[in-house]
Amino acid sequence: MTQPTDIRRDGHRPLLLDLFSCAGGAAMGYARAGFTVHGVDIADRPNYPFPRHQGDALTYLAHLIATGEIERYAFVHASPPCQAGCSLTVGTNRSQGWGGSHVDLVAPTRALLDETGLPYVIEQPNGRAEIRKDLTLCGEMFSLGVIRHRNFEVSGWTIEQPAHVPHRGRVRGYRHGQYFDGPYVAAYGNGGGKPTIPELQAALGIDWTSVRQELTEAIPPAYSEHIGRAFLTTATLGVAA
Image (cartoon, rainbow, N blue to C red; front, side, top):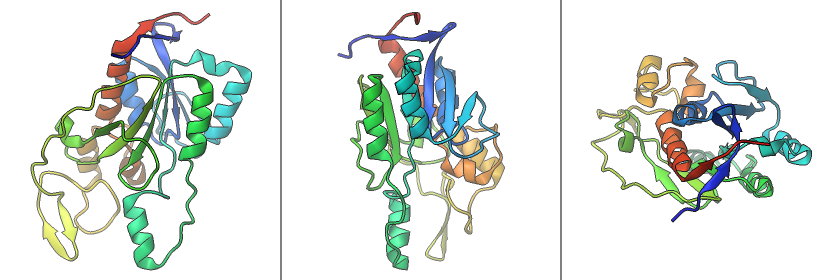
């Protein structure tokens, strides 16, 4: 049984720090769950729907720890770049004879998150990223038009793993020159048979950005809303000093 966590609050909503925030797929879910969200990303993300800091996420997190400002936050979500361990990238690199030029930021992210003393999750796609798979979510669990399996390492609290729902069919598109139909769209890349922007938005549950790259990188807000609601049911609501 998870022990209650005393969470810091900003007004009437607990503050959440969204590291490597991209265009805000995770952020929107947490906001819907009841958090006030602050994002951090090294890229300029004008479509991010909440207050954001542009800069290196780990440098900014270290600054928050050093100054004590991290104590304003109740929870941290981190989605460090995953190309080093992503199964799609690993397979492509191997087929092209490329070596591992991507930087793995999972371990340094975890080290800093542990310093905060805050509950957190680290999110990664299926692949070789070295995280505990404490929670795995799939689009079919939320009746979405994508599969998009994502794994979460959970620290400082616990969450139940929902049952994996059998997929209803294939992901629509071409595989090795053959076209397959199915109830899911391929939320990655630009090749033949890929969905239109409106199809991607509908499948992911995202309507605040129409940038394909941002859509293909995003996790569906339904995932983080599920996580956020689960966390808040375990928390004792407090007020920051």
